[in-house]
Image (cartoon, rainbow, N blue to C red; front, side):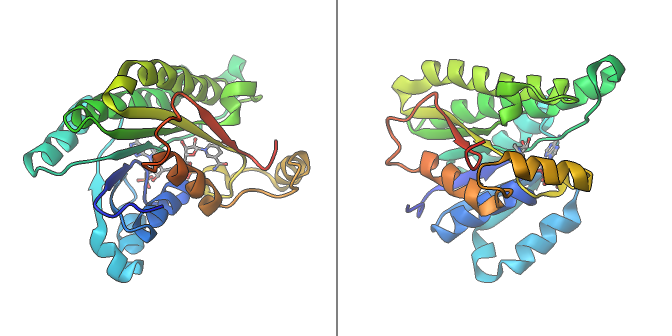
Length: 245
Ligand code: NDP
């Protein structure tokens, strides 16, 4: 896969799965704008560690839940005539509670980040891509959206919403050369799930046919496949990368 002369925006692109996606685009010759919300230490360390490839990485700090910040980000790209071909909506959070005990603020925090953040970025992203009549939008969802997991009503709803919203959008923009798809990773060892107790990790690994968690680079490979020019007839799809879960 060749991403020379292409620019990808990867939200949450400085840690975990997003970081691996950023690295994969850079390795394939692309330029990346990796966004993050608050962990500037992780972002700056990541860029410094990349060496020469880091010259094709731009960092952008803003909150995907804030429409004014999202708009300012895309306006900034337009004003510098930066053309974006790929948008990966990867930023996400968890705030797990059984629903009967779920604080409403944690319902909103997860929906705002995972679903409204994806909406705001995708809305501005496709408007940007329409000019070139070419684009690839990839939302990182989760099997939680399909199955619903205990303690994750907010997260599951947000992840199901990303798929449904993506399918609607895919129908709206297909004739303009823009595809919209989802990647649904299984368990991947990142900071997002490092609070899971050891017995839960053991049980989850046992439930995966491959008997292990996925690696971020294994998710990144799927993202790049959908982002490739050659993936021109894959639209409105969800690619499961779960080790067979
Ligand atoms: P991490 O917690 O490792 O990284 C999350 C990233 O999202 C960080 O870069 C963070 O920024 C950014 N972020 C969070 N909130 C916001 C916000 N409001 N505005 C902008 N950026 C934000 O998560 P993962 O890499 O594990 O997860 C990435 C995606 O993959 C998520 O959507 C998650 O739901 C999904 N996923 C993960 C699975 C897993 O097992 N890990 C399984 C299935 C899906 P900062 O660095 O500043 O905090």
